[in-house]
Each structure stands twice: as C-alpha cells, then as structure tokens.
Length: 97
Image 1 (cartoon, helix red, strand yellow):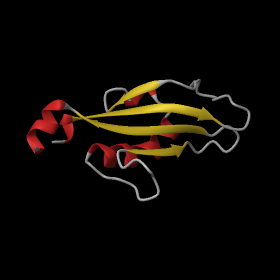
Image 2 (cartoon, rainbow, N blue to C red):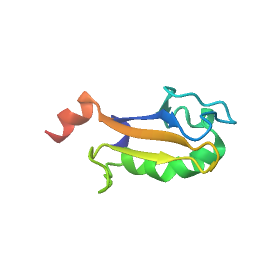
Image 3 (cartoon, one colour):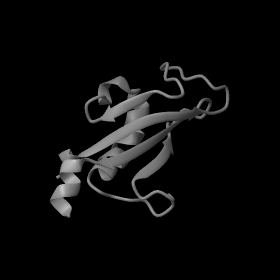
C-alpha cells in the first residue's frame, strides 16, 4: 500500500549562513525513495525515519498538515530545513474509498 503514496522531500530553507556544504539549494525537490542517494548522507540519516513514517501513513501531532513533516539536518552552522510530504495517488484513493 505504501507504494501508492508519492513522497517528496523539499529543501524549504537553509538557516544561519544560508549555504549547505553538500550543495543543497532552497527549492530542490526529491522523490522518496527513488532519490535518496541524492541527499546528503548526514541529512538523510535524520530524514529517513520521518520519510518512511510519512510513506506508511504516519502523521505527527505537532504538524498542522497530517500529510507532512518539517525537519532540519544536523549541521548546526547551516541547518538545511526539509519538508517531507505525502500525496495519495488516485490508485490509492480508489483502493480506500
């Protein structure tokens, strides 16, 4: 069932100095799990449990949108902010309705 959900990971901000040593830029968009190798390994280590959870249907009580979560990478000098979002495909919506 999780394959019927599209998950995207977007770079929504880069705090402090505004530059990422890995080269991520604000506005970059990745598909999960297909593009996981294109994301900084340190950032992906933080992203992974949330991306997997979102893909499997989880929601996070501190988020307004139950289909997304926003998190930061561990670089304290230039934290990259990622937004992970789930979109149910038409096939999934048809299965559950």
